[in-house]
Image 1 (cartoon, rainbow, N blue to C red):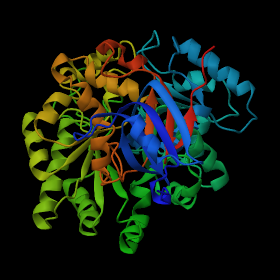
Image 2: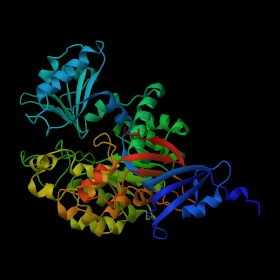
Image 3: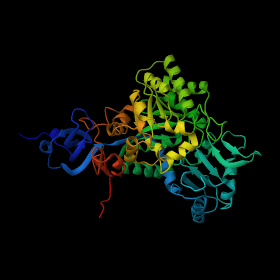
Image 4: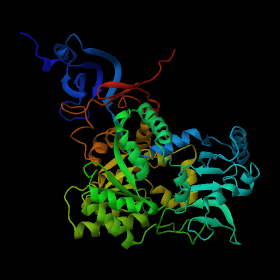
Length: 522
């Protein structure tokens, strides 16, 4: 009998295929046609679906999983950070200054010199360089040092003047005499970031491509891209050129609210876009909003960016227009505000299966967890923030106190409460390194917050697809779903728990086609 065209696969892949589907948890082979999974099962059976043009990919000995989904990536800033001076491993303030000095010597006068991923835990002095130290490097270059968390930046005098910042603006740090120190925090830092968001396609697209290449190396096939509206418009206009799949995550600050009304009225991306707001800062910069004060400053409870009324107005408008809403909330006081606003909006305008999100959700109380589950609020969380680098857990104890640090990122309790949790990197705050994130879920510094390997994998596959309303297309390896896969050097169920982060991503496939392949070691 002649084989029908419909039965022929474009590509057949063999290996240890972990589908994450309850029906067929592990199979030997998967068949692909036109970028869609059309067959699963024994390798011998799938070979019957081969034709003259079928491509075979023999990955015997490798483990294949559904492509990872990262639900929180600042793609433009990820690309920008890769071009800046990387301070992640700087050991002292003098080391930082020497690295900047080298870059300044290579940079024409007047052009911006910036450094990223500054980490208080790695430098001996546990402080940033001060403005005077940066001024001593150059009076002709604007200079900026970005903290690892993205919520604090130190500027030299030249850059401060160029931005026309006022000493009385909220977030502009001043000394006892009211003189700006050069440190800019939330919410004034938004003015600084506006300069790091290229508005020209020719400048922005290379940065985005750099970020997406990093995503593919981490096994990520879908990225929830969190960008300002102007950047998002450029990204969406070039979507067909991208090597990964994206979900648009529009970030609205005060300067973009005019665009918010235009977007909501048009309904152009209602079926796929997320509308995002930022409601507090971060613990690292001591701007996350807590009920308790920071240990070294009893007057500092963090910063709420909105009043309840302001936030409810904006969330309500997006909700009534049928969009999914996401709000950045790290501290428990901010989480309380966000939950109250969501509850209020949902009482006024009930909507089934809204899947509104809270980003970070780092320190929820037990009561807040139950309320989030009852209201159907989902969480996009970033497990690498529990252990970003050596000594980070100890550093956070100093920043937020022993009690609060022990309660940070309580994954076990959140899942047990029934909250939908998806995983993200928050890149460039943490690197695009999904296996490291999965490792950190299973090896959380606080044993009470650890979750199983399966639950950790779900966060970046099944539940990441669900939080994006894409569970019918992604998240598991099943017939009819997109042929997006990650190929791992080892089975994450078969290695010791403490070695999960050492598993390498060897290949990433999007639509059945190889989008990334690691170089083979000699």
